[in-house]
Amino acid sequence: MGTSGGRRVGRPRAAQRPDSGLEPRAELLRAAAELFTTRGYAATTTRAVAERAGMRQASMYHYVSGKEELLSELLESTVTPSLTRARRLLADDATPAEDRLRELCRADVELLCGGPHNLGGLYLLPEVRAERFAGFHAVRAELKDAYRQLIAATAAGAVFDKGELDLRTDLVFGLIEGVILVRRSGPDLPVTRFAGATADAALRIAGN
Amino acid sequence: MGTSGGRRVGRPRAAQRPDSGLEPRAELLRAAAELFTTRGYAATTTRAVAERAGMRQASMYHYVSGKEELLSELLESTVTPSLTRARRLLADDATPAEDRLRELCRADVELLCGGPHNLGGLYLLPEVRAERFAGFHAVRAELKDAYRQLIAATAAGAVFDKGELDLRTDLVFGLIEGVILVRRSGPDLPVTRFAGATADAALRIAGN
DNA sequence: ATTATCTATAGATCTATAGATAATGC
DNA sequence: ATTATCTATAGATCTATAGATAATGC
Picture 1 (spheres, rainbow over the protein chains, first blue to last red):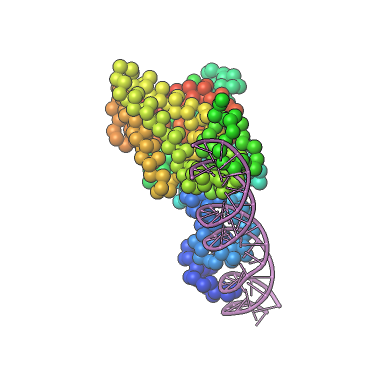
Picture 2 (picture 1 turned 90 degrees about the horizontal axis):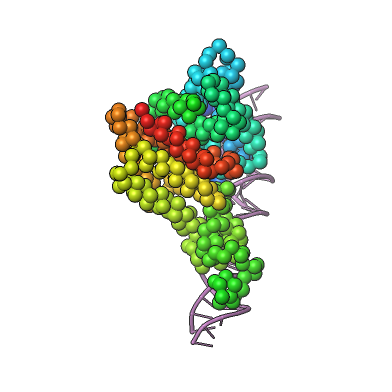
């Protein structure tokens, strides 16, 4: 029998379990992602998260220690795959830097905007800057450095001085994050096409 | 005698008035801008705003009806000057469209990122999407339309189809807003240079 | 008398814990 | 016996109002 259908241990829920097929903890994470990105972190109550996941407020604490854990786990889960791919692309010196930069941009945009709940929107939350999310920030910084290296390698002809390289890195990184905003205001845009266009735009900024 | 130094009507404050020279209401708006952009809207309490403005929590209600009024006033005050300039630029058909688009981008970035508290950061708050800020959204939409028209006029050679024009408009608009994010993570960057570079990047996206 | 402020607080949350309960497992 | 859930609630907020107070103005 499947994991979801069978009789389960423990007191039954007051409301029906949602039939998403997800484990309760994953269901909580999904609910949190949805609410955090649309309403914001501070404005989202533990009750709202729990109830969207089909359980009572207090039951949430059986799976997570609180809101903070939900957010930090969501952040890590979005940035980690990007970094893995960035490392792979950096190492792959058989492919021209320009192609690798394009690929990194394209994939990043798809990841940030392509998911069901605009997970990239989490990056926009002011609360994310807090000290306690230092782990996330470290990974982001490493990702940004991968962008910087690929941008430097792309502009093969003209060698930028450090200030110019940093500026272009900031712009490209800003473009990617800006796309999150675009997607937030118009969630129905064709993500694939968007990702491609963003990557092209990034190359124009990076190029000399 | 100046407005700030003289004896004032009413019970004296418990703490010293801040010597910013601003009226109490303006002081509240400034405090709100600072806190909303750094900590977020929902996470900012009326107490924090009032006390940063040098008064007790309850005294704030003498000047504003609550947090919501503070945010909506801040939003309007940032978008209105942009729109005024956008209208002027649209009407000025003596200047090439490309120059006008560059100027609009440059000025927008300076306005959003140049102020003391990264006012553009207000646009990133999830709460801003709420219905009650419809006035702000309407003005933003008009501003975006000005971008669209200038982008269409810029690409004089190749005439885009509507989808292509919308896509490029979204990208340029996203780039501008992305710069707000960049500035939020690195507040010490040279804004003027940044504004220029962003405008150039926007033109490359807009051009064909 | 008018005004700007204060102190105090009611009412409405929201979080996190304590302890009860209703399943399955053995 | 173990587990997943529930109900109930203490304690900590946070907002907005009521009413007191301490200035100036006339």
